[in-house]
Length: 432
Ligand SMILES: [Zn+2]
Image (cartoon, rainbow, N blue to C red; front, side):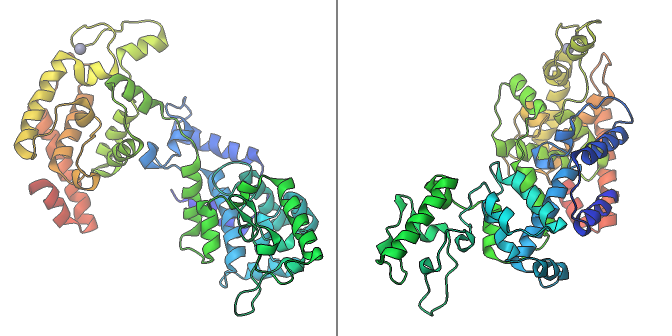
């Protein structure tokens, strides 16, 4: 999709405030294109999720927009020499821009100049600090020297005589505020220093409980604290936002309920990743994803939504034909799976389990990076593909059709391997 780089270019070069309606329109246009103006069958939230979480990694433009502003904050902090605009924005500000995000809102407002781009970034930043994840307020990175109640008498110096930027951790511990006379500052016992120390602690307490200032750093804060501009910064920010977004996958819930098996998060992640990466044949990837998301409707589901027709299996006439029945439990399809499993036992070592978790969802105890290169996973893909070809037919697919499908997958993967110069890996998967 070459739309994404174009949009990202605009997000990064024009960091202006965009209304939510703009992103709503964008989502509608993309949804209309993807589903050809028909009713969506998979939610946009799931489609834009990363592949390892059950999505197809369709761009989430709102997250990319926020990521472009987070990138600006990283650039303010690292003072990226390759970005002249950092110096330009800094020249128009009365104080270091890198301090701005970590200060209380009241202080931000008093210090900030009416620069439209700075204001936009800070406005978006404030929406992030309300929640968990990126940098909930208050942050351990708060630059105390910019608080109105901070006095220079509280500044400590290192053995070389250089001033240490004051942070909450210098004044607070898990047990509470550090007593003034234990701080490494000059004149710690004087009345005036103790007075300023008391004012500072009271100010911090007025914004949040003391423990909140010394919490562990989030991933974003740790990145800023490191002080180096990371490579692929925008993608990193985007991945961070995507990972923090809660996602409920109904297909995962439904599979777990029907299989009576609860997958751990990492197991489901491996299943989803495998569906996209186990074969280079696009047709196989598409079929895998459709099995995963229970795309194909079974009699039970159609009867439930249409309110008419029969919910009987089209092969064995059993009532209430659920997806698991059509894919696995139906006596007619069970014979097909047993035949496939017999062949699998001849090529896979140790013999694989004859379970729907393994055969349908490719949930295996083997490491995903090993399993995805095996011949077994390709034979299973071919089995799912031929079941789809025999969808709504009263018989199970013959083994000859299955073998022909295996050959189709092999030749498709061979063509991709030749184009990519990965013939050795292709041969390794299929013949060794
Ligand atoms: Zn049946």
